[in-house]
Length: 221
Image (cartoon, rainbow, N blue to C red; front, top):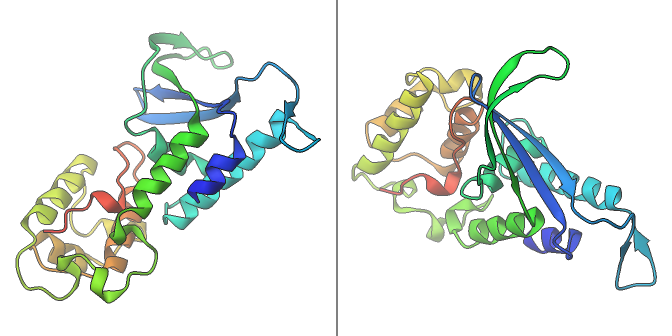
């Protein structure tokens, strides 16, 4: 999908504005267009409205999120993935909600050229064999091919992710994750299949008060 992200905004004018509410641990995202002109001159003798470009980009983000198996299937899940490592805070402080008058402590920032950053993430995902939807047997990570050696790093990684969420090995199953026996196998350092790991990522990402995880960051040993 990298080529599609590159094509949707070749001008690099789309921006992603984010707000982080510290009280709730919630990220709010909105796509903005930095172009001043009401139309963009394309290579063909036609003009494209910025609103249409934004709509195409948002729809593409939702498709990318669903392809990765992110739980909500909305563009926001993809925005969360793309923004990791790209967030630069431009403001931090207390603000008053315009309607409820609630005082909130927030951090805000803008990520420029967001379509190109989304394309870069797609290239990183594609370069890692274990992130493909269907894996040929010879390309599976060692821990998914039936090896009996202990996956110590993976077990420690999962233990930390569960601790961040206040979960135990029974909880992921309640959020469309693998069953509790599979989660316990991972915690024991035993090998599991890629489909179980994907379900685990889906469950972990259903908890919005913790950092999002990606399939590619799960340790192979």
